[in-house]
Image (cartoon, rainbow, N blue to C red; front, side, top):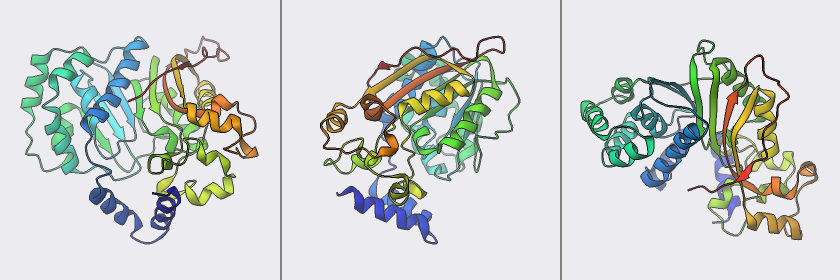
Length: 325
């Protein structure tokens, strides 16, 4: 599919009455929001791995997830890994009881995998899964017994949570959909609610999302447009993705009072080649970035909240290469 077809459809749905409902229906018909258990579990495990790599432990922790999405798989995994509580917030009403039920039932076939990756006892995991009926009729029937609270509509810039009460703020494939000014406030709020030495743990893909439906374009294709031009295609509405580059994300975390414990970036070689040989003409608005920064298509970070006594000018180590599922 030519990417502009999808862009125009989403732009129109974003601007007409009932468009969001139609979008949800199209997602269900097209299977875009179907459960992809292997992929989605691995993404949740990557967050768990980042917590462990940064020196965190999940049992008895309190967690905030930014961006629930269609399925509460990240909250399920953190709850099964031993978290005391998980609050998951979203600005969109994509989660339904049916999705919560289907996801919970599917996890029953992967308990040994979850136990191994999350370093928890398999028997206790099995007992916990059996204790929660798969016949629930509401979202709360599946989430509440696990200590999970789902908040919609919710503003991650103003969570209402108390200072210094959260151990981990996490998200998966969310940050690229949040404008910089809003995201800056979210990171400041995360810093406020995190305990001393608490962690902000995120995985996200700052690539052109239309490249997933059009193999003719690179992951950096959207960098050829001015901000005004991009506004129609993906700079607003249902298709919004922010085009922030890796340097922007690093700056936001540091300015919000975090220090990187883990910072990995994956550079897409096809995009880098197109930028370097001029076949992709990057708009002058992105002139300050290096070709490598422009070509980053995935990032994984675990940032520690700086204590008041620590230097706020302390910067992260250079980000390393990485790989994603």
